[in-house]
Image 1 (cartoon, helix red, strand yellow):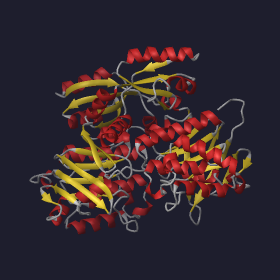
Image 2 (spheres, helix red, strand yellow; image 1 turned 120 degrees about the vertical axis):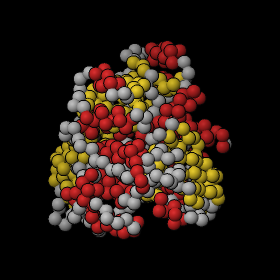
Image 3 (tube, helix red, strand yellow; image 1 turned 45 degrees about the horizontal axis):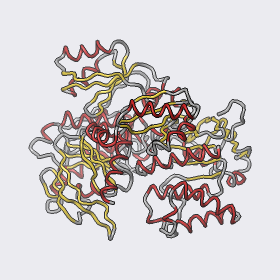
Image 4 (spheres, helix red, strand yellow; image 1 turned 90 degrees about the vertical axis):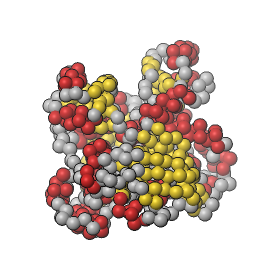
Length: 638
C-alpha cells in the first residue's frame, strides 16, 4: 500500500461476539488496512474469524465494537450503503448462484439486482466473460458446471458492476488446481488493470504467498501481519530435511535431543527445526546406526512461522498405538479392480484400479468432486459399486460386508462424532458398537491430551480436539485398515501437524494400512504413495517424489523470476512463454533448458526496462505437478 494514498478498507479494533450472553469472541480487536491495487489475505483455519470479518465489511453482519470503513463509507453506521460499491463473493462453491438458471440468466439476474444500464452491462459482461473464458458456456445450467466454472460464474455475478472493492470468502476452496491458478490470474488482472482493492480469506497457506500482504488469524485475533516474505524471515531457528532409515528410530532420536526444537515426519523425509550444528545432529544419527542418505537445509515457510506463533517451546507430542496383536494375521491391504460408481448418467468413479499395501500411508489427492469420498465409501461398504470389485483386509466388500466392517476404521469428512455426547460417552458408545471390552478410556484420553475434556460435549470441543477424538473412536477396536476422508479440512496448522504425527505412528509402529483423502496439495508429501484423482478417474499413482520427477521429465523444471516490477515483467514474458503464471510476487515457468531460458527472460525484461531481476530453480510443488497431470489426462481423453 502506498505511504501517501489513503486506505480503501480500514478496520480498527473490530470485535464480534456470538451466543446469547456474547461469550464466544469470534473476532477480537482486529485492525488492518487495504489500499488500492492491493491483495490482502486473511489466512487461518475454520473458526479463526475470517468469514465474520468479511461479512462485517460487506454489511451483512453487525459488529459489536470497533470502526470499519470501506471506500469512505462507515459500514457500522450505514451497512446498506456499502453494498453498492462492493463486490462480495460468499463462501462455498457458487453459493450465490441459482442452479436451475443458465450462466446467462444468472448474470442477468445480478444485472437486475444492481440496476445496471444496458450499455454498462454489455461492456462489463463482455469483459468478464472474456477474462474468465466462460463465453462458450453461457447457455449451460449453473448446476451442470464444474466446481471451477461455478466459481468463475460466481465471480462474474459479484463483479458485474465492476466494483472498486472485492471481498472474497475462501474463493478457491475445493476447486481443481488449474481453476485455482486461473482464478488467481483473474484477480491479479483486475488488480493490475483497475487497481481494485481485494480482501480475501483462505485456509491454504500456499495462497498467502500470492497476496501482497497477509494477516495470520487464530481464534478471532490477528497474531501477525505483513508482507509474506518479511513474515517468513521472522521464523526463528534453522530448518533442515533428513532422509534416514529406520525412520521411526531416527525420529525418536531427534525428538530426544535438546538442540532439535521440532520434528515432523514428511513421507520418507524428516523435517526438523534446530539450534546449533547440523553436522552434529547428523553424526548423532550415524553413531546410533541410522543410515542417513540425505541432509539438506531448507527455507522456512509461512506454516513454520504460524506453528511457532501458536506453540510455546518444545511440545509433548500425543501418542496413539494399537497393539500389534490386533493387526497381525490379516492381509491388511486394499485392492480395487475397475471400480465404477454411477449416479444416473453421472459417473462419480470411473474404472479405478488400486492396490494399497500393509502399513502404507496412501493418499487420494484431488479437489472436491473428484470422486475421493465416493471411492472411500465404496471401500468401506457404505456404497455399492456399479461395476468392478473391491477387497479390504482380504474380504469382498459386497459378499462379506460384516467382516469388512470389523476390520476397518472410518473417519468421515466432518468427523464421525455425536456432538451432544461427552468425550467419554462417545468413546463408550463406539466401544460398545465394536464389542470392545475392558477399554482403558482414561489412558487413551491421556495419550491424546483429551483427559481434561472427558466431560465436555464433543460439539463444544475445539476443532483439533474433535479431530483427535474422532480418530480415537475410529481405531478403538484395533482395525488393520483405516480410512480417513479429508480429516484435516479446516483445522489449524498445529492440529494438522499433530494429526499427521498420529497417522505416522499408527502406520510405522502399529502396521496399520492408512488410506487418506485430501484436497490440500501440500499434504501430499506426508504420504508414501499418492493417487491423483480428477473427474472420477485415477490419473496417476506413484510416490510424491516420483510424480514430481515424471512431471519434470515431461514438462521441464521450474524457473522462478523475482523482480519488484513483477506485473510489468509478467506482461513482457507471457507472449513468449504463454504457460508462465504468477505465484505471489514471482513468475513461474517450466523449462527444459533453464540457462537458455534464463538468458532469454533476462533479455525480454531488459528490453522492457526491467533490470533488477533474480532467478532461481525451486523444487516443483505438488500443486504444479497435479496441474501438469490434469492437462496431460485431458489431452488424452479429448
